[in-house]
Length: 360
Image 1: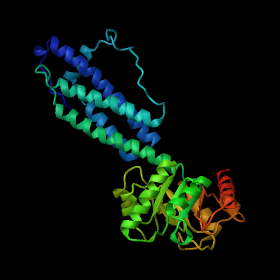
Image 2 (image 1 turned 30 degrees about the vertical axis):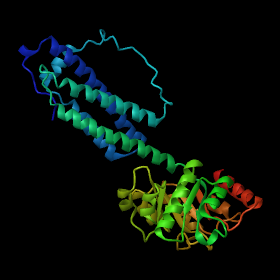
Image 3 (image 1 turned 180 degrees about the vertical axis):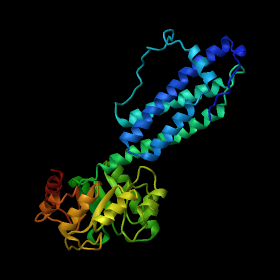
Image 4 (image 1 turned 90 degrees about the vertical axis):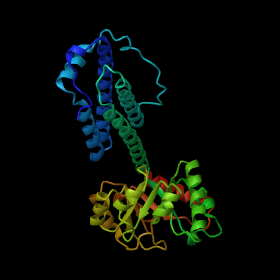
């Protein structure tokens, strides 16, 4: 429904003309900003829901009665616009997609606010509530789009070497000390496996790891526990087949949080992707002490998972220098290994070589 209430032309005075000229410019600004956001949602984020919401908003706000359209066009004076070619330094940090989202959302939001304010004039008959509601809806959509873009950036970092921190492999090292060591060795993805202790103690450990990963520009993935992922604001949550479905977990997680799912077959990988997963961890490729996913599946199953999913695939289970070539050839984007109980220069050198092998 249009926000305009058609005026009688006999009441259309100079004050109305000036107001309509401002409204016309603001409507154009709103439409242009929404169209950019719609295209980003459609082609940049490939998100049908956001695309539909933005398109519907744009069409709804463009529904102006013909009589008002004529008044808007009659008030337009592009050549007489003293601000048409003014340029200012916006202070933008660069032409990336995130900046385009914020800039065009603000452009549309400001235009909507102008129309709201002009609705207070007695000579202008506009239902300002429609434009106010659209502005607040756009605030939410802007935040969601930026968060979604952030999640896409995190997803692109699921590559190279991932390290699983599990209590039985820490030896005399704390979780934080071991995480600091493997990050120094080259990993930028830390996955928290089994953690011993009460919930309060586990929360303290994961919070400390969250702080470390934030400081070192590393991703922190929590294995299996939605509550911990939420509590410590983790970058991601990893789910097994017996855990909550990815789609259910996604409803509770912030938009920018990754969801990974362990898949032992192509069908499980396809299902995970359809439910909103951001990356896939394979079942056990080879036998090993680490039981991050339960079933040993072998290289051929990894190849089928790779073919079935467009998501990053993290291979896990018994991966070493003797077989990593097979894993990479099968299509793994990353490999996950457990952190060793002790480390020295040979350990860090081995990790660097492993990471370099996968990144190539």
